[in-house]
Image (cartoon, rainbow, N blue to C red; front, side, top):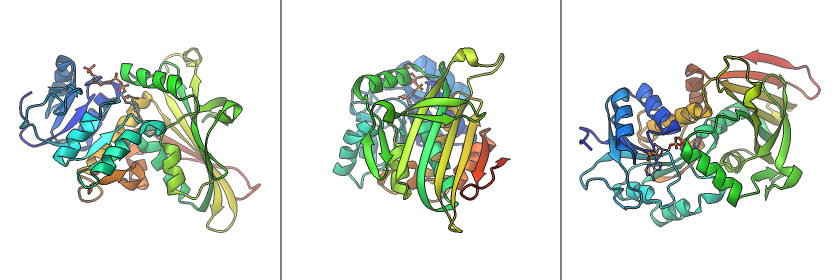
Length: 350
Ligand SMILES: NC(=O)c1ccc[n+]([C@@H]2O[C@H](COP(=O)([O-])OP(=O)(O)OC[C@H]3O[C@@H](n4cnc5c(N)ncnc54)[C@H](OP(=O)(O)O)[C@@H]3O)[C@@H](O)[C@H]2O)c1
């Protein structure tokens, strides 16, 4: 590894499907920010670093507390795009007092990272970003929820192409969920529960009106949205679109439907439905969420560098800002609102 002139952002897993997109998104947001791509296969990471520019590559050994890096290596942040079961990457960031972003923790497996944070709460800012699409969906939901004075429910449905499964690390994570955690967490009528059977499924309409049967997923969005709003019901369900149903020439697009019911500021009860569609694989939006979070943690956007603490994306990023950036980067948003109970449907595109 050649030493970068300024401390760079160490992106472990930076040569993977989502990590490489995050590195490119960060480069687009911050043209001069030094980046180090960490992985086991140095040649692949190095090729990508040359393409990105202002970047280098480092071989990472997660079995070691020093990650296999030289003693004098200096970084401004550590961002990890794989499930680091040793947590050596987090301990490394805490020891150096630099921000750490965990991208691969489901709601049931954040315990060890939380314990490490509790042990050294003043050491570094720790961002748990295992949220759906890198936190962008939770932030979008919070932005849309702002039109209500009280939120009753937030129900998120997502449709993925069956081939949009990410790289080997992402596939491994999904197998881990299927094997070890059969029941997803939802908030229902004010109570958290691990949903089972039919309770773990939900039928919702996609962006074009197609009816999908989704299955709840144990991502961090449920706990974030439950903590950040007064909603009594919060859930996130995934449906898989068979690749055979894709139109000729159509890529691996995906869509997210956010439905919110609540009391508007004028006292009426309303329901609003936002459809987010994006023509990249889902890792594209995830990577943009991660890049916006890194930019914020370092104090390069939205305020000064973030102080040590344990964070979720909604504690760091302004939802309105993130939505604007997503739209600039190609995400489309379609809104359908029912302004009053039994009122007339209104639709608009942004
Ligand atoms: N929160 C979200 O929104 C979100 C969205 C998408 C994916 N994810 C998560 O992001 C992670 C990456 O997914 P992906 O699709 O990008 O997978 P991927 O293409 O397999 O990428 C994995 C990356 O990690 C590196 N890597 C793997 N094992 C390593 C090890 N032991 N030490 C050092 N580097 C290692 C790989 O490079 P080498 O093989 O060269 O080591 C590669 O750069 C998964 O955990 C997935 O669940 C989260």
